[in-house]
Amino acid sequence: MKHHLNTLFITTADAWLSKDGAAVKVRIEKQTRLRVPFNNIGSIVCLGRVGCSTPLMAACAQHGISLAFLTEYGRFQVAIQGYTPGNVLLRRIQYRRSDDDAASAAIATACVIGKIANCRSVLRRAARESNQPQTADQLSNAATKLDDVLQRLTQNHPLDVVRGLEGEGGAIYFSVFSQLITSGETAFQFTTRSRRPPLDPMNALLSFLYAMLAGDARAACEAAGLDAAVGFLHRDRPGRPGLALDIMEELRPMLADRLALSLVNRRQVKPDGFRREETGAVLMDDATRKTVLAAYQKRKQEELVHPFLQEKVSLGLVVHLQARLLARHLRGDLDAYPPCVWK
Image 1 (spheres, rainbow, N blue to C red):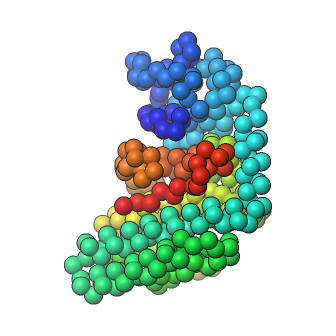
Image 2 (cartoon, rainbow, N blue to C red):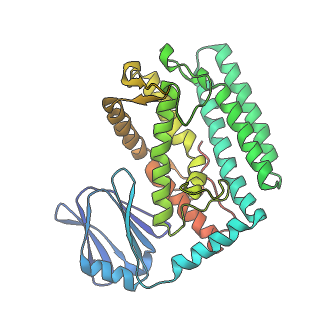
Image 3 (tube, rainbow, N blue to C red):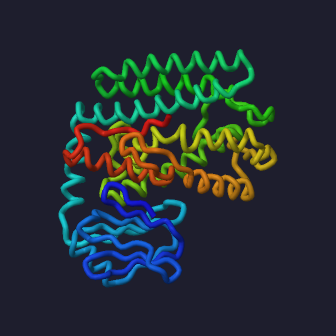
């Protein structure tokens, strides 16, 4: 259980939430583990097998506390809201900002800065750990090029330029991605990023992890009262969760890329766990998919100190915290959106 940004996150399986006077009470294995007054809570997010009493639902509605339920994998299921215009006002602000090119560019720039900075951290860490001088030099040189991209992002640019710098940073990062693969398995060699469809096992693994992270980001947006379809870096397109993709950009290197590399380098996934379709697409078999899912959930349980909040949080909660920080920025509580830069 974590309490961040006036949001109570319940992650313990079989926890039961109930109303206790003017507070919410959390019971686990028939023992009261937490009691929080309603006036200290803005929202409650329940992940996995978490139960809740009807009187508590009614009390949350009366006090303007949103109550959201997600699966244990982070997929949004339902949110319970009372008669409050809060989310409507927040979304109207979101829509207005999205239509404002300068405001969109400012938020998009923050997202891209987070992404490029975290890509740089992945490369620098790999360079320090490498026992091959040539590989370490290549990774360090790429990280230096990303420094230059980050420096240019500190200036005010229109949205198209921000997108161009994001593409340039991504190209630099993936140009040395193969140097991060140390397992020696030729099947996992990486040449270029291929998406719809992925054309090799490494791209298939990355795409699967990105899809799960996108689902988590979409759930986080919905639970925070934001419209996951209306983004700032990713513009509106039918069926695309633009805002969820915005938020996940900064988290890809730390949550998905490093996990994919770890699974391959530690040989937790095997080449025979992937199959090639007649179309050329490469897909994972069921056993490999289960291995990746389990590793992803374990990865989300790891902790880091959030750079803005200066609190220790699990990686799985970071995406929810970022969505709520963005909501606070849109409401005017924060001057700018603070990306999560991993160190």
